[in-house]
Length: 101
View 1 (cartoon, rainbow, N blue to C red):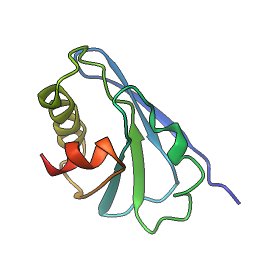
View 2 (view 1 turned 90 degrees about the vertical axis):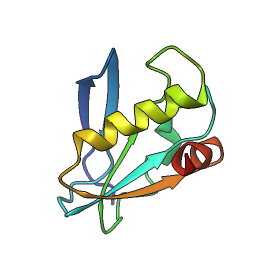
View 3 (view 1 turned 90 degrees about the horizontal axis):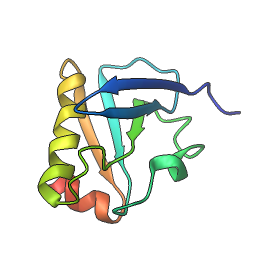
View 4 (view 1 turned 180 degrees about the vertical axis):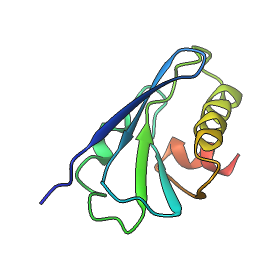
């Protein structure tokens, strides 16, 4: 059974869509960072519904500067939005490069 998905558009130098993949509200936040560049985080949907943590993904590239620094800056903006939570990063493919930066 899939949890309800919540969409939280937030304005960060442009419109960045953050998608919450489950309905949990835990002190920990799992941020899924998709591969690419040029992909979206939609392929995570359905795989993390039962995660024990509040789980989100977001689409990269809203700063319109395809550099590793801009992707890291976007991730840092997402982290800043949720600074009251313990952050756990999970990157897939190119997303792992962003997470490690």
